[in-house]
Length: 127
View 1 (cartoon, rainbow, N blue to C red):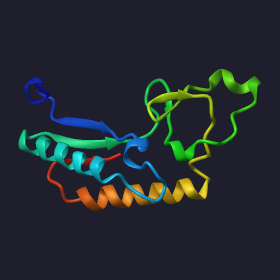
View 2: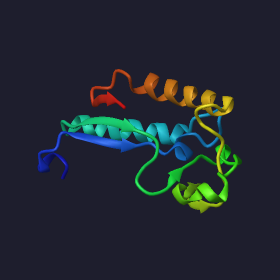
View 3: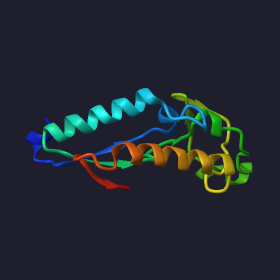
View 4: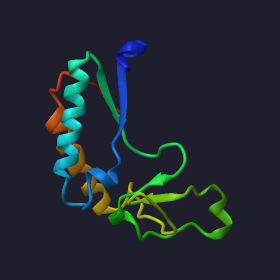
């Protein structure tokens, strides 16, 4: 259907919680499914690009990143819902730009996904 609509690039959102259920491992099933999607895209002449992060609506957080402080009540008017394990939570999360565990987990996920798909013919761009 995508190819028939004249689109040529598909942007995929990789939910951190699905791909990295623990900070020191990457979900092999999720990675295998991602490879299947890339293979299918290549078979149909489509390119794939990835984006991970905040999507419209809530902030998506892996369960192991939860536990940080919420901002003071006076500043919560801008706070988006936090979703983890597919459910809204009232917990804050660690700062993923400064927390050493989060940074190490990010490096592992990036190295794993890029190392696996870096030469795949369907990959158009890393975002």
